[in-house]
Length: 194
Image 1 (tube, rainbow, N blue to C red):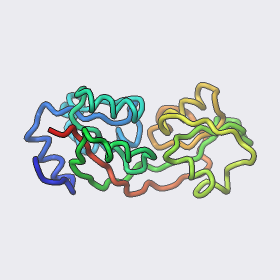
Image 2 (image 1 turned 180 degrees about the vertical axis):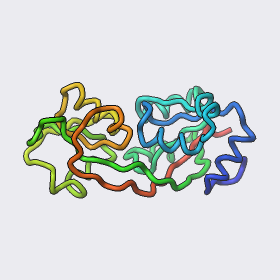
Image 3 (image 1 turned 90 degrees about the vertical axis):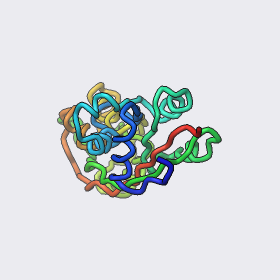
Image 4 (image 1 turned 90 degrees about the horizontal axis):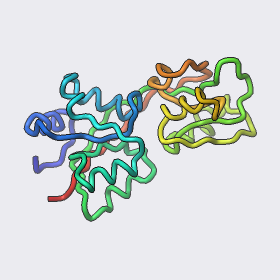
């Protein structure tokens, strides 16, 4: 497809015409990226065949450059997305808008005053804005690759609170202190230039 994607239907048309396309995005299962790709690839066989979940955005970039994946799906909230835009080797295929899952400020069960809070850089600002009323001062920040990784940091004892999404709540038994509804996110799709 030579035109710029601007809708979910554009994406689905491209995928239908290219059955072997592998799409890489931030994993593991349960991240907001995985949530969006699950929506886009609603057929379970399609999802299992095409989805490549990668641990961090740097490895997604490398996988695309090294042709291990055909398309990278990156949220516009990723703080270093400009690396993809400015790459001489990559091309922006398009973007779509799709709502993120809800985000939650949570504590480990039994914790009343957390001192170590895990999050990822894309939503760290929420500690001082959306979750400011329930964020204790002072606290130590534990930055991970995703909000799902933040939930796992609480499960592993590396932190006693976190910002996570619905996927993190499914994975780890956490006490929800406050919920922020998901937002409309711009999802960007890149491929190698031909």
